[in-house]
Image (cartoon, rainbow over all chains, first blue to last red; front, top):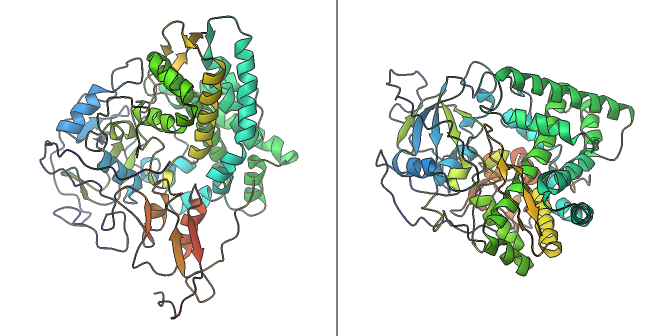
Length: 446
Length: 89
């Protein structure tokens, strides 16, 4: 996929009346360290905080639970009226919620927004639970660069393509099981979970048979309000301990897999610490399994929710890659985002952001920005170009994006070929209280 | 895991690469390079990477950006140059 220019089509009024001109990441953009930055704020780069009135937080966050992945009206209202608005986090800390495409892309790509400061030290926090402070998701460059370079070559588009045949075989085996199953069948445990579980476990070199435990941990890691803080803390400890055990096993019996490569980088070259190693593997497993599984089940739900969608990709398999990009754009999966902390004062959507302020930039909302996408509330499986931010942007752009694309493409291609009459047998049931939205069950028949 | 072909180590010296190139047919606008090596890369309005016209010879951040590109769209080369490359600062 080659995204083309998102053409601004509408200059909507904003609360501040000072909407930045999208995109903000062009040649003179603030992401540059080599060109003069635009004035950060009236008080320039002076880090001394001046007295200011903290606006009353809106009640928009966390959003009320809704089943499904369809457009979120609260985000549309915010994009129109308050694209950078004050919210209260589950921890009680405050943050700025950012909802427009250009601003989201800027926050995600600009080094003035730090992940490290949102996870270490005394800065604002999402919740009162331990974070994986040594994980790659919590790192800024140059630490992030050091860690990501250890695995980047294994996650390139070229490597993902080389895995396509094995992935197609896995998909075929799983669909054999579905065909043999009584109807209705639940595609979440039969298909959406075991595919990415096998792919990431084989890549890492970890056992495939712990899916149920991993499910529970992945959902706990994603809890916003679903379970008590103590239960999240417990799950993080368990999953970290599980991974530490696998690492110990692999140290005794290294193999041709990513875990062995990371262990060698730790033990032979001292390129990462033991805590970084464990956290890195937890993130790879949680992202490779839980996130991909949720995305796949969500896509199948969206396709079956309007049967003409399913028929479209069944009858046009060559159009599946384009359709998947649209499903990635449309699905309102993320209803929050990893916090960033501003490292200097700056202005965002006309709002002064102070040094030390937390910012939450929502890619789901950016993907429905009316100034970038025509009729964003429509799921148009032929939409192209489609410069969505479904995999994020900037240094934390999903490392598994290319591998996820291959899995999703093979999964939907084979599903529609082998189940041409697939249809929903009952409404999906949904996970709730998590940072992401996804089906818990997907009963289908054929 | 297949290692990526080694990129000549460089700090902009005469032995290292002198130019960065972005293959726009491959670029998926991840934004990784512009965030990793902002003195070398920027983004076009459509998000795709561009080598800055005023970019110095590739240094470590540019090598990192090439190594992190998920579609291997960035190459660092010693382009045949009729004139000495600009001095790095």
